Amino acid sequence: MRFGYQKGFLTFRFNGKSVSIKTAEIFCVLLGVLLFLLAEFQAGQDPLQERYLFRNGYGQGEEKVQLLVEGLEEDAVEVEFPVWERQYTNEEAKAAIERLGNSLGERILGTNESLAEVRENLKLVSKDNETGFRIRWTSENTELVDTSGHVYGGQADAQKGSPVMLTAEILDGRGNSGTFPLPVRVFPPLLTEAEKRQKGLLEQIQDSEHGSREEAGFYLPGEYEGKALDYRRRDSGEHIWLLVLGPVLAVLLRARGKSEEKEQKKGRERKLLLDYSEVVSKLQIFLGAGMTVRTAWERIALDYQERRERGSEERPAYEEMLQTYYQLRSGTPEGKAYEEFGRRCVLQPYLKLAGLLEQNRKTGTKNLRQLLQLEMTDAFEQRKNLARRQGEEAATKLLVPLFFMLGVVMVIVAVPAFLTFYQ
Picture 1 (tube, helix red, strand yellow):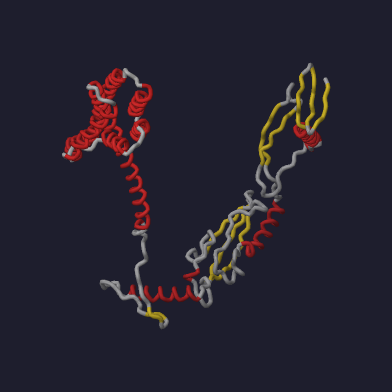
Picture 2: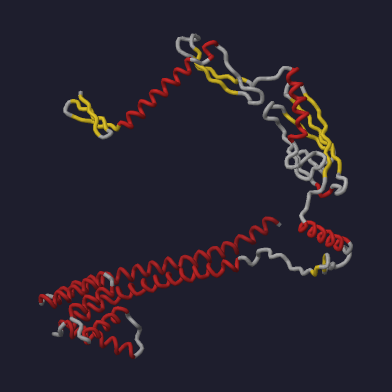
């Protein structure tokens, strides 16, 4: 086996075959092996060689340990057991509880500056993460400060504040505990000038409402602090849908326009298919009478024009034939006129008819009548299939009102039966 290096690749050749490997890929493999060896080496230095297992520190919670035990059986045995966090001795627990209790005054302040002036919520935690001790809170007046730390300063004395005694009971889970009272003085929250004016106006409105509860209504203040006031009901959002109504209607109109265009196109194609057999039949008859293709075409188009003038229904196939007649009258080459006729009609049968007429014009095909006869036979067969399909579609559409009528009948029959049953 031979190997070589070229442009970041190592190439190995053996038995006439060569394999190229990027040097970066080899480096990744070697790095993985190196990390594995380091991990194994570190595991070999584990203190478990001396059968000593370190536990989590205070407040870090228990840990589930999985070990492989060798020597118990022929093969290594896997064991799993919980290892509790390190616990305080009774003396250490009492000292830690004392330290935690003395520091609670600063820990629960939150955004307040001191417990002597509490205007915002307090931070009453139920567990100390450092020691793992539980803290149970009680409040002397939950209407001012509840056990979750929420402060309701709106009910407090604005001048002197309202005193509340909070009590923290610290438990270590092993019977050691400590109780620490924390006196708190609650003040109303500090308000901006705008908030003060709003609060004053609200108090005036509430006083007016409270003094007229036996009357049909009450008057709102006409002015406040020398400023004239006007009132209007806040918009409840009931009319927000009007903003959406315009775009929704626009989208619906656009969708309706596309749907109508699609239906018109579908109806036009249906009429074209229905007229095709008749057009081919007339051409075949006039050609049998000795007319040329152009003369027969003009005869059919002019006959349709006379019928339209007498109020006959508009037919798309004959409209296209009439347009082709005008093109021939204006000097358009016959072959091009037939080709554009087929392109405007779009459907495959008309494209085939235009091809037959163009072929007859170029090569002088003498059996055009026979080809038109075959085409007419196929056209009548397609027309029968189309009529059958239209009948099936009409029957399907009739199922909707039938199901609706069935539902009405079921309601008429079922409602009296249920009423009789529950009486």
